[in-house]
Length: 244
Image 1 (cartoon, helix red, strand yellow):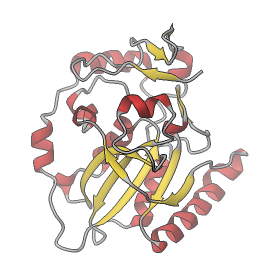
Image 2 (image 1 turned 60 degrees about the vertical axis):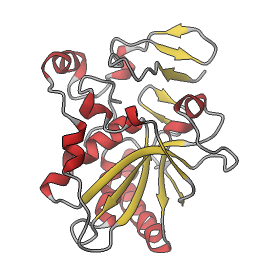
Image 3 (image 1 turned 90 degrees about the horizontal axis):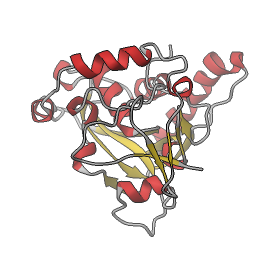
Image 4 (image 1 turned 120 degrees about the vertical axis):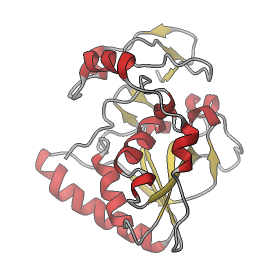
């Protein structure tokens, strides 16, 4: 049975440890803490602390730091579970204000049924459209290479779980790299092989990440953009951390 987070653009109480998840059939089930916080560096008490101490960042100020490149910018698109946490961890480590290469980000939906246009969060969460929650990155290749971004993508989640990150289950939470050129496809496959050999083969695990050509992209609703910067105590999948 596929579970979906309560969604409400006017509520900021979507922290995983106290929110209830709603299934598609209207029943309610509380998520298990040992699933949500297994191997998580902060755990429940860290999440409680963040609820009361984390500052709220004005997204307009954050967006103002995002700039254009002096060279031709390129696009990278990744899916690694709930897009709130994916965007958050990339921008924490590549803040545009520090000129590390990421110029701007947008969360949205891609990789789904081409007959479905302008998919909504509700539709995507239902799983029927086959879209993935994804992050689109505009980056300056003179500052950060696509190779580095692909490797960082693998560091930030568990790519060995099929259609799942933590307690988030469904094709919308799959691990995927959506490539924008033949060169990106070759790089993504090479880096995937390197990461597999170095980090997962010794553990007896296999990467389940899809590497597919990028297709139509649909921006997610505005309240999803920079969500964890606007709501620092909000839900963040516990797999979204640096694994090495």
